[in-house]
Image (cartoon, rainbow, N blue to C red; front, side, top):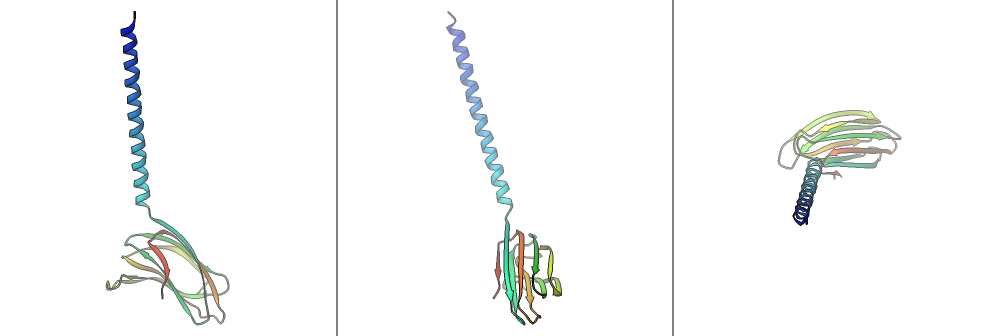
Length: 150
């Protein structure tokens, strides 16, 4: 009657469906693992901070960074110039410190910071103008936090 042939076809279709389901489960597992690996390996932060410094006053803004991490930065002023010191300090008790770059009466700077050690890396600006100076700092890269130091 052909029942044996029908049974073989049904068994074959069931096995094919089972293989396809297993294949789809494996693909989604691989995709999830890849996504987790990518998101776990990139800790990119991005911030924009605006600040105003009165005549004769100073401000310090730093990024908390791990050794070897990299940040792109750009800062500008729109109504004057600032003296600045781009530097890093290790965590309290580490005795680490470094000067990356200095400038006098500058209206902007951009570049990259590669942290030489764990700690805080950033800018000290002083206003030597007779008027308040407004600045804007943009940062993108691998850092834990950005903060104004007191």
